Image 1: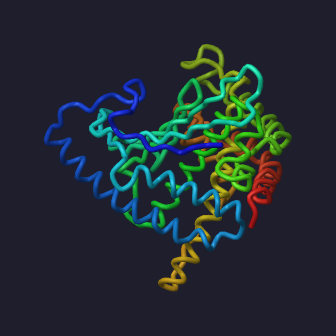
Image 2 (image 1 turned 120 degrees about the vertical axis):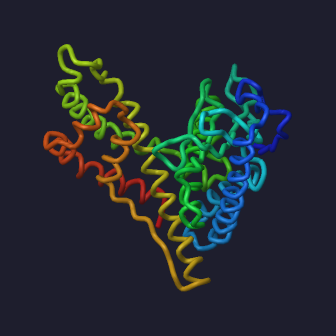
Image 3 (image 1 turned 135 degrees about the vertical axis):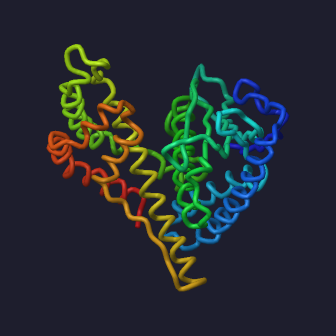
Length: 332
């Protein structure tokens, strides 16, 4: 069984988040802005909750109810806040999932927990939201970057759902590493747990990793990496990380797309005006390499060349197969 727990601020681990410092005038101003964002986010969470009924499968509905339930622990007041310099000015409530399997594997402790913290951050960042896991595997943070957040409810809802799918995927993997596949497949329900299981995509992931090896070879031939370049050569081992990230990002995008459709139906019912967000696979893949998976400016510049276009052009057919498999897995 699993038990979600909302901890008070005083019980948050000091190793997981630093204690807030004495507030300056700038801190007070940032906190006021955070409150404004929190109210908008709370409105987005309510719309997600109202839109659940429009999802076409019980698995999708169960998963979105879990998203709503977890976000309810952070909004309207349980979120943390970080100033533009990266200092915590408001602690986050800890959301804890306790897992107590009835028949744990031999030599495995019967008790396990997974912790999540959520912050509104005023730091500069290229994304509206990010999910960050932390070793030894049962902790993770969600950061919502205020400079990039829209006040539009629908846009906020998409950011929240996307980052929460990453959080739920991380929780699934953490529990799976501890107890095997049976326990996480039932959390929060059997139907929803099945959506987060990605082992069936392993053959398609390995195909994409072969494409990524060619991208590594291409980047290592560039002047900034070749010979006595300014930066070391990429290791082939990086393709395993890219492959895992790809599966999770496609899953998050597809589920968010389904939720976006449900939000569109809700809006259409209320105002006769809908909204949508479509996944464009190759653009999505190139964007993730450029924005998140490659940080070196030389690599990012190389991605704009004809040589990179040729490398990426060979990926499209196999990427579309992967996206199609995920869409079939998630359901209409």
